[in-house]
Image (cartoon, rainbow, N blue to C red):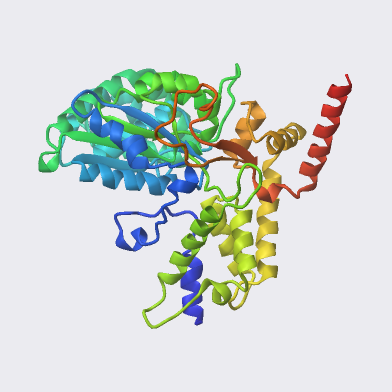
Length: 470
């Protein structure tokens, strides 16, 4: 295999780019893993509500899951589905030029939505509808000293103004506070102006479209920050500001951090149009530890398609032994990923770094696993978190503690669900439907052999013996 081809295959495992289903090349790489993810289908789980409420009212729904599970790919599939149903869809990744996920609050999200809608709806709506809001705080905006923005006779280039504010929030911490001080007391009036802009746009969408859908991706990457008084920025954005998030005047889907989907599930379910829709990890083992070949084979297919996209019709290439030295190596990489697609891509890519020529050897795969294991080791920051991991490994459940929420956010705890295989003609037996589908939690497999985790397991056993003797 030539070095050029090896480089192409290596780059096809870049873990940080979602598949764009509208692109034929990317679409050919997509693997449907719904059966190994509890039957998750985004068209049904989010799309049907949007379509069925189109003549009634605008909806606001939340979407979550572990980072790197493929949420962005699924949301792009949702975008395609909605467009096929006659919707005009504005999709954007909020951390790509708009917010800083390490330090974010509601006003940042509002500015991001405003900036993106001004840009995407430019041909269809009257941007001067925001001129009054800008004009009422013109002096404050001038003091931000954005050199590229000109102020003439009380007028300002509104799209450029919001673009500069977004850029400053994303990249210039010293300006971030100044912008928030202007926006925060005026979010209600800005939202009202944005509503007018959206209403105007909905009447002028192309091809006779009437339904506008906004998909705000990557808000799940917002890092939790605990404020004075104990509340987090997650709660401030998605709970305290729920009414404002819902009040754009069009259908909206927001991604949210998986940790808040568990800690405040009831409030989110009551405040929005449904409970947060969760995309589980691809199940490669059952709750009892037995291997699930269907899930493992789906992960192998992810690898196979990324390799074969670079081969011509005359070239033949099998994963084993040409790319991986043995099926044992390929199987081990899939299992050690825990079913987490991004981790699988990272493990394969790091394995490539350890070799000069194909195939990937056992030594190379093991080295990649050790490096990622060390990353997860550093993600656990306290004895309490190690103990929480030991408890989840034993019970396969989470209780909603602060430690568990942090571990869910950092992907040290993974959530799994298998499709419900119950017959459709079941009787209403209260003892027979405790769960809609088998759902459980487990520790990332790369953590299981870390010494601190084993020590926490021994500590948990000792604590339980003492409780039993007491």
